[in-house]
Structures are given as structure tokens and as C-alpha cells.
Amino acid sequence: MNNRYTQDKAASAEVLRLILQKAAGHQASFTPPTYAVWYEFLTGINPPLSEAMNNLLNGNEQITSEIAQKLFDRHISESNPEAQKAFRLNIQRVFGNLAQIAETAGGETGRFSAGLQKYGEKLTSMPDTPMLQNLVSEIMQDTQTMRSSVDMLQEKLHESKSEIDKLQQELENARSEALIDPLTSIFNRRGFELQIKKLAVNEDLQDKKIVFMMLDIDFFKKINDTYGHLFGDKVIRAIAEVLKAKVKGQDSVARLGGEEFAVLLPDTTLQGAYAVAEHIRQGIEKGKIRRLDKQESVEGITISIGIAECDAHGDWTDAMGKADEALYASKNQGRNRTTLYSVKL
Image (cartoon, rainbow, N blue to C red; front, side, top):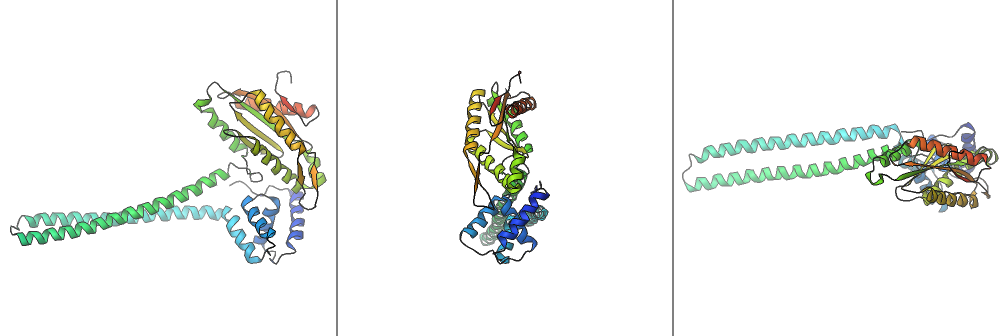
């Protein structure tokens, strides 16, 4: 599982200052779980926790040690290695139960088979009707017992299947988390490359183009130096939200690292991609982002964009490199602009 805490020393010191400021008015003791709750809330790296905290704070709820512990147990501790260990133990328990059920059913089947053989032997020596009726009654009783055993087996198998399905979903969630950037909840580089590989084997995209869009936040170091690293993280999350809102269908958005993003646009023309890029760029330029520690909003944040295309089954690494070249052409030409790749760059 990828590291959730990517803040450097300066950013983490800023988080500490904010925690002391925000948590001072609440009753919870400064225990490790309480600190973790405030840390993940203020950095925005845990959206479900942030939603729960905002609901409490908007309702003027006091964050007590008990509430902090519950938030930690529900939204943070499940991400720990202990959750993986619990998952393995649950799987082992399910399969152990299945084995026991199958063994029980096997024993019932063996007894039923032996009983049938015994009844067959009796039939050869029972000419009168009353004895035959009694024997049939015994067979029916044993058959009913066997039927109950089979019904129980089916019920237990159904319950076990449901539990395995649930555990399988938990495993899929864990796998998905490894492909997601924890700060923005969009694909990381690994997830982005996986999306490209899926498109490369998509027969519906045969003889069609894929467009790569590379984006970079202008003067991001200056933003961090001026407003702090936490605000820089908020800028990154805000831009990720804009990108998610502007794409659709098979399009994919990723944070490749730092302040750099990528967008994958299958079955899209360069002209269409350019229009999307300009819409994104202008929307970000006009936006305002509110600071965490002060009642003020910052505007005028801009991005530079580079665009290149390739065949759906072509060399996507080369296309990404060309889009990166176009991005740096945008930077060199003054930033806050979109550039299409050309061999003249």
C-alpha cells in the first residue's frame, strides 16, 4: 500500500501548527489517534474522514477523545497492515468452515449410502406387506435426514459465497487504492499506465487516435513559498477536481507527481483536445482557492499544457514524451497557454 503521508518537513510542520490551532478548542487529548485524525483532516488526504469531520464541525460538535478514537478506527486504522492480516485470517476462516461443512455432508452421504445398502438387503427377505411398509417408512425418514443435510450445506455454501464476495471486494478496493494518488483521489502514474494498456488492447479503438495532455502548475514553488505547503496541496486537489469535471467516458486523469498532471483522451482529435485543454486552462485561471488558515481566497493560479497524439496501438511512451515537449514549449513561451506538439518545437 502506497505511503499516505507525502508531506515534507516544512509542510508537516505547518500541519502541526494548524492542528494545535484547530484542536485547542476541542476536548480530545493529544493522543496519536487524535493527532492522526486532525492531520489527515487538515491535509485533505482522507476524503471520507474529511466528510465526517466537516459534518461534526459544521454541527458545532465537540471532538472528544472518544469521537476521535471512533474516527480513527473507522477511517484510518483500516488502512494499516493489520487490516491486511485480518483479511487473510478471514479468508482462512471461510475456507476452514467450508471444509468442515463438506466433511459433515460427506459423512451424512456415507451413512445414507450404507443405509440404502442395508435396506436393499432387507428387501430380499421381507415378503409381507407390513414389514415392507415399515422399511419404506425408515427409508423415507433417512432420506429426509439426508435432504436436511443437503439443504444445510447449500445454505452454508451460499453464506460462505456471500462472505467471500465481500472479502473479494475488500481486496479489489485495496488493489484500486494502490493505483490512486492519495492527495487527489485520481490515478497515480501506475494507474494511468494501466489505463493506457487497457486502451491498447481495446479492439473498438483500432485505427483511432489517442491524445495525451500533459499539464503543469505555473510557478508552483512560489505558491508554496508564499502561501505554505498546505495551500499548495489544496491547489493540487482543486485542479484535480477541475480535470475530473471536464473529462468523460473512457477519458482518464492522473497526477504523475508533484504539480504535474496528465489526461488521456481516446478517440479524440487534436482540435477537440485543444478545445478541452483551453476550457480547462481558462477555468483554472478564473478560479479562486480559499486558504485554510486565513479568511482569504487566492486567484490567478495558472497552468501550462502540452498535447500530442498517437495511434491507439502505437508507442504511447513516445506520445507522452512529445506532449511533455509541448508542455515545456508552453512554459518557455510565457506559461498559461496550450501548445500542440509539432516537429518544429
